[in-house]
Image 1 (spheres, rainbow, N blue to C red):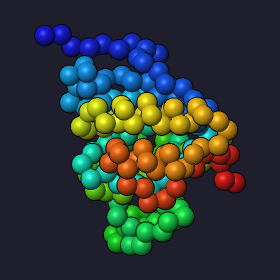
Image 2 (cartoon, rainbow, N blue to C red):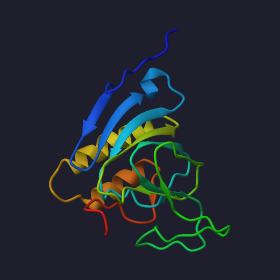
Image 3 (cartoon, one colour):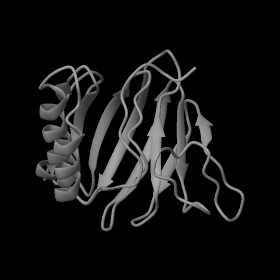
Image 4 (cartoon, helix red, strand yellow):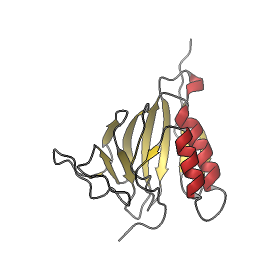
Length: 174
């Protein structure tokens, strides 16, 4: 039995104008989780969402992103940046070295509110659902200047992504 070593800059890369994802470890590699390096461009907001079965881990390698992983006192459909948990938890501006674990069923999101790209390591369990999700969302992003929100929603429905607030991609809000 052999392990897997993936050097810096290596792995299968999916690139669109909206994101860059490099597969590091996949279900096909026998991994207990899928592992990706993700470049989060300025203004990208994945939108608050949950996974009924999936668990995720995010580790910020470079740059800054806003993160949260809690059930808010009140969910709003337009945005998550002002959400607060019953215990007083709020959205965190996370820099390099920050880590977020998301258990199944927990609302969570990330966005890059800065003018510089951020880079994160992302693990998803169980594989290979998020691998397929990334492949298909990259296809959607590649189809033109606007993101087809209906196609994104159909994709998310198939891959256990229960959207609460919209995915957004554009210049960071000032």
